[in-house]
Image 1 (cartoon, rainbow over the protein chains, first blue to last red):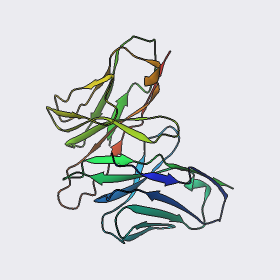
Image 2 (cartoon, rainbow over the protein chains, first blue to last red):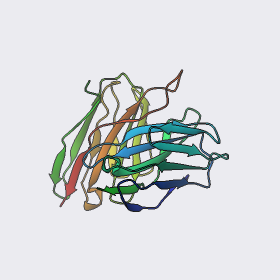
Image 3 (cartoon, each protein chain N blue to C red):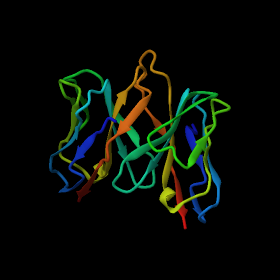
Length: 112
Length: 116
């Protein structure tokens, strides 16, 4: 069974601060996705990374896939209250990546 | 654009009752999934389907059944409901991975089920 460990589990910060959350595994994944989930809604995709060492930027969010494709990080610069939510990483496996394994998530609260 | 639609949004069941959670998508996606989400536990895969007529078990299939008679619909059946099935259930779909598809999962808004 492939497991994804996310840390920290909870994070509460002030508006304007920077933060990094992590997603680690002992298994190799062919792709890794990050989702954000707001209360009462389903998760929404933020980014997909597929190449070891890949870095993608989405405005104030920077995503990195580890060289060995076993880990990933999400860095948020100058956090805003609108960034509040549950951040989930999901690893793809199988010949066609049709099965995703999800981590337990990091619950981020950005206080104004 | 409707996307993935789940019904009902909320339901309370008594122990031993049965019910079906409905899921339909209008994006012509081949792959469909049912997840359950418990507090602090992330998303656990219950069942998935790679196309009409094909279903397979995920991590936590016990107590559930699914069918996929059409591309659009993927209902989840709970037989003999138990308190351990109290959870939020999410249906999701995704296209195949050909071309530039990222494999993005499109989720419904969830169905909150309580078994008392």
